[in-house]
Amino acid sequence: MNEVIKLDKVCKRYKMGDTIVEALCGVNLEIKKGEFIAIVGPSGSGKSTMMNLVGALDLATEGDIFLGDKNIEHLGESELAQIRGRRIGFVFQTFNLIPTLRATENVMLPMFFQGVSDAKQKERARELLTKVGLKHRMDHLPNELSGGERQRVAIARALANDPEVILADEPTGNLDSKTGREIIQMFIKLNKEGKTIIMVTHDLEIAKLAQRTIKLKDGEIVK
View 1 (cartoon, rainbow, N blue to C red):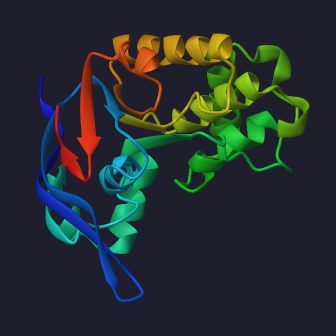
View 2: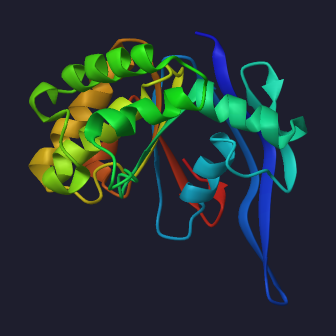
């Protein structure tokens, strides 16, 4: 397996008033292409900070982060935006769907920003919604869908530009346990199809379904 993500001596500090908060401290991590990783740890351990750094949503204070052969710490915002749009798909706890757009239109949105034609956007969106079991709900608004259905739309949207990496931040956090397990089974299936999955979760039972678990505490990897 090839290395898809590498963190080398990564630190992230935030300034809060007169106080410096060290969210991550000297983190080293290698993730291979095709792995399914769960990141766990107590609140404030640095899980979301790590996710933001890996997803090129934020930059490290110290250290290097590689996505493939690119050191994303040395890229400008326009290049980072291209990487986020093409190589990484995001799934969030709160779904982050646009309430005024139908399911199909929410899935089309990432493709619009990559300059894909309207016809191809629509075709791909309908194909992906069918893949996640929502063929009959394509034209519904988010408030007409259940929590599990909204998360399925969010997964379809994350797959829109066929990214190599899916970052899922507490993807089952707003779902009941049965629906949550259905969503995790969907990630397992995507992983078997070749996607690299990195999931932050507080649910240790869910984490057991990943191939490898990374435990954070006080900004450091402890397991």
